[in-house]
Structures are given as C-alpha cells and as structure tokens.
Amino acid sequence: MLPSSNINFQIKTLPEIAAIAETKQVKEYLEHYGLILLTNYRNFLLLKRGDNGKPIRLESFQLAPDEKSFWLATVHPRKAANELGERFLEYLKRVMLHAAPLNNPKDVAFFLASYARDARSRVEATKDLPQLAAVRTALEEALGMKFTAGKSALRSTSPPPSSDFGATGRFSPHSSDERGEGIILN
Image (cartoon, rainbow, N blue to C red; front, side):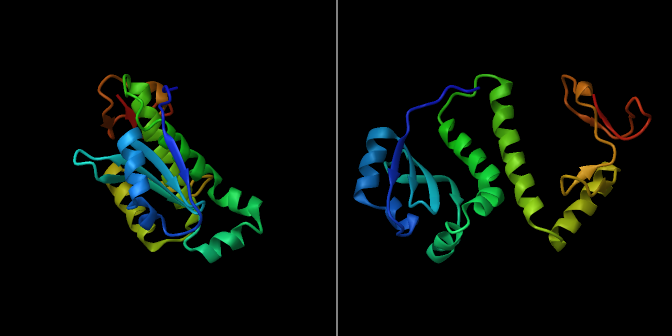
C-alpha cells in the first residue's frame, strides 16, 4: 500500500461547498498545508494549492444532491451506506493517498483499480441507461467479443486470463486462451 501523507480536514455545516472553498480561512489552510479535504458532510472536495496560491479543485464526492436529500438519507443510514458506501470508501482512499509518490506500477494500479471500481458502482446503480447500450455495442464491435449480464453490468463472455498479461500489455483479439475462445493479453 502507498504511504499516507499529511492532510488537513476542515468540516463545516451545510453551506455549499463551492462557497466554502473560496473563503479566506480555506486559502490560509491551503497556504499552510498545501492539500485540504473540505466537507460540509454532504459534499467532499479535495483542494490543493496552485502555483499562484489559488485553490485548485481536484476530486469531489457527493452523498446527496441537496441538503433536504441529505437529511432524508440520514433516516435510513444502512440504505445510504449500501448505495454509496463502496464509492465513498474508494474516494476516501484516493484522497488519503493523493500526495503519496507513485514509485512503482502497483501504486499506479491501485489508483486505476479504484477508479474502475467507482465506475463499476456507478454503472451498476444505473439500470438500462440507453447511453450504456451504445458504449456496450461499440466495445463489442471494437473488441470482437460479447458482453453478457452478470454480477457486473458489463461482463465479458470470454475474459482474458490475468496470467497472460505480458510485458507489452497489448490485446491480441485474434489469439485465443487455453479454452480456445476469447482474447488474451500478450
């Protein structure tokens, strides 16, 4: 796992997070710490100090679209945790490791996998989205493979074996795996 870095947490009540990000207090924290996770409990915003001292907005996360929805979600915390927990945890991991150096491929893989898990959760939470069908069709045509419904919204009927990932990491759609089907990485 990547080493953690120092980060300052600033928790405010429920005013809009964008307004908080522009305050003198936040700018002073940024000047001192360089990196801040700002939250009003409903929204989370990672800020860093820019070259000119102005806050640069990095990654954000929203538990609810507005204050009313946020307070309604607190009535059923388990439901909210089931719907947002995995994505929120991935967001917090990325925030905590944001300033950590990426010294080896495993460090980069951690971030890529985290964003992939976040994307998967978003896709799985959105059922029968027409835009998703277009992406699915384009991927199937480009990769020469079919996706079927399964635990994930998009699951290949012929996943490449992970052991076939070589130094080049290139897809070879004309090769086959040991079952004589699908694509492998070579």
